[in-house]
Each structure stands twice: as C-alpha cells, then as structure tokens.
Length: 454
Ligand code: UD1
Ligand code: CA
Image 1 (tube, helix red, strand yellow):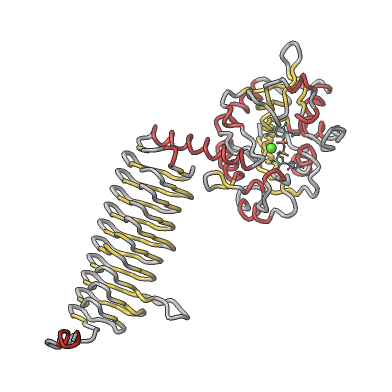
Image 2 (spheres, rainbow, N blue to C red; image 1 turned 180 degrees about the vertical axis):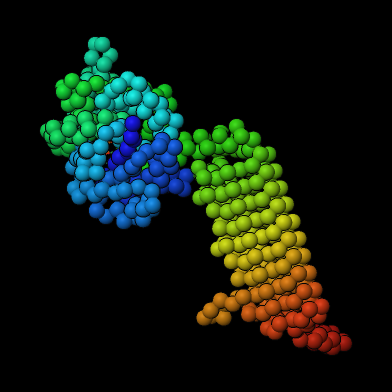
C-alpha cells in the first residue's frame, strides 16, 4: 500500500509571540519541522506534502529538496489546511499520515506502530492518542460505551463533562486517503473558533459507516504540541534528556546531563566524556576517548579520537586525533587541524589549516593561514591577514619556529625550517633554513638610568 504524509505548518503561531515562522523555532538547535521530516525518513513514504502559508519563504528554502509544498492562503483551520493537498492526493489509493508541524518529538517508532495499528485494524482513520493528567488545551477523544472512538471535541467546544476526559488527540493520524478527502467535503466551521477542524472528519467517517480506531501511546512526552515558548522550553528539555540517555546507552559518559545540550545530529564515539556546560549543535562527529568540555560549544565539526577540548568555541572545523584545544580557544570558518596538535590558551584560528605535531600554545591569532607539520608558534604570534581592504594568506612550512610576539604581515611565506626571532614584524618571505630578525637593535646606555633618576 502506498504511503503519503501531510504536515500542517501554515498556522500563524500567534501564541509564540514571534516574528519567526512557528515551525522554524528550533528544538536543540534544529527547526521543529526538520525534526518531523527526519522522523518520517524511514517510513517509506511516496510523497511528503507540507502545507504552508504564503509567507513561508524560509520553510521552503529549508525543505526544498525533501518535500512538496502546498499553500494555504488563509488559515481557516486544520481541516481546511489538509484540503489544500487535495489536488495532489485525492485520486491516490493508500494511507495518508497527517501530522502537525508543531509536534516535533513524536518518534518514527511511534509513527510505525500507528501505521501498523491502522493497517492491521483495517481502519479508515486511526488517531494517535495519549492520556494527560492535565489535558488542558488539547482535543479530547470521546468514546462510546463500547470504548469505540466516536469523535474528537476541541477544548473550546467541550462541555464540562467532556473536559474531564484525559485521553487527548495528539494531532497525528492515519487515514485511508480517499476516505479522508471525501469526509473533508463535509466539514464546516460551526464551532467556537469558526475554524474548519480536521478533527471533525472523525465523526463524519463514523457517520458514513467508516471505521475509526485509535493507537494510544504511553509516551506522553513525545506528543507535546508546541504552541508557546513554555512548551518550547519543555520540548528542549525532553529532547535533551532523550538524546543524552541514548548516547549514554551507547558508551558515552555525560557528567551532568542537565547542563549538556547535544543535537540529534551529533555522533559520539565510545568512552568519550562530555563535561558540564557543553553544547554540541548542528551536525557533529566526535571520535572515541575524547574529553569535551567543561563549558565548550561545538557546531558542525568533526573531531578525531583522543582529543581534549576545554572551555572553547568551535565551529565548522575538522580536528585530527590526539589534539588538545583550549582552555579558551576559538575555531571558526573552516579550520582543519592535524593530529597531536596543541592549540592552547586564548588562541583564535580562522579559515586556516595546520598540519600535525604543530603548536600554538598561547595568545595567538591565526587567520587565512596554511601551516605545516611540526611548526611552533610562540606566545602571541599574529598573522596580519587584513590590510583594511582585503584578506591575505600566510604560509608557514614544516618545522618553522616563529618566535614570541611576532607579526607575520600577509601575504607572506615562511619556508621550511626557518626561524623567526621573537618580536619580529615580518613583511618579506623567509627562505628555507634561515633566521629572520626584524626588530630594532637593542642599545644599552650604561649608567643612564641612575643619572636620569637624579
Ligand atoms: C490541534 C487539534 C487538537 C490536538 C492538538 C495537538 C484541531 C482542530 N485541533 O489543536 O485536537 O489536540 O492539535 O497538538 O485540529 N495549521 C494550519 N492551518 C490552519 C491551522 C493550523 O496549517 O489553518 C497547522 C498549524 O501550523 C499546526 C497544526 O496545524 O502545525 C495544528 O494547529 P494548532 O492551531 O496548533 O492546533 P491546536 O489548537 O494545537
Ligand atoms: Ca498545536
């Protein structure tokens, strides 16, 4: 049976009080909608259709390679939103999964079980439900005396008695595709919110002798709908815990899970220890036996095995094995560092490569540079990469030794085995095996200080 999905993401998100499009609000650094699309990936769907409003340019840009879009010009309700996909799906046979763009924590495993229940019970509609002790705000599942689902009632339309129902609609459903689009023709907006509710198709399908079923999940945390920033915070905490526990189960030590935020696209090898205050966002691959943190941010980077990084901020970088970084180092804009390197206290590296066994242990700026193997940059070495108009490149070849507090004015090349005297300001290339001294000569005026004091 062919499978399709419709993801509703056109809502105004008024309760977020934000100029950011609702489904783009990130949960652990990744937009809500991207979590949903990622979770759909192993469900063998033939088509994924996202319903968006007219101004959803950023959503389109983000998902352009993964889904199709339909526009809902006016936000007249969830039922109206699903109808926007009609021209694409109404003639197709199969199962259609409908999800809300604001429920990013539902796992693919739960979705698989929902689909399975739907197919095995031969239903026309299967609702993913759960039970909340405080169901406020959610649609309630109304069942008859046999326990069969007869309809869903929204909070605002519910009687006091219906509000006592703890079983809620998670906003996720499976439908027989053709039954869904036929039922949608019958919905109206005679309700408290004057909206065309998708939830009304349940009673319509029942009335037309269709079969409605429900799959109740016990994992109430998965089903949280993010309508405001309080729920957004909650979702961040739930996902943080889920990801961290998963990593721990796979052999990663996390000293303080409460202060460790790791994205769903970060892979970490066995026996790596993550210290408190560490934030790993975007897509990262971190090797085995590393010590990361405390207080370290890493984004979109690859870290080798046996690496130690303390109190540092690293983005868009590749770091080799057995390298030490920090405390207080910063890497940004494409940094590639080899094995056994030491980048120490207060060193910034930008758009540069550094070979293996090299060192910049203290207080340096390395920008737009190509540094070889076994190079030593003394304390305070600066690559002067910017002349006020453009950026220029510094090349330092293997085994060079750059004395403390030297300025290397780019473009400049320091050849293999060259030696630069401390305090030099270098603006000419330095040949192989040579010593460059570019500072004024010292003069000692004997006894002058004593005379001066008088
Ligand atoms: C909806 C359900 C409710 C359920 C809850 C679960 C309805 C009527 N109610 O309520 O039963 O318990 O989700 O979280 O369906 N959207 C559109 N176009 C619209 C309106 C909404 O695309 O015109 C999208 C929103 O972007 C959102 C989703 O549909 O992703 C749900 O809409 P929302 O307004 O958040 O519905 P809830 O009030 O949470
Ligand atoms: Ca919602």
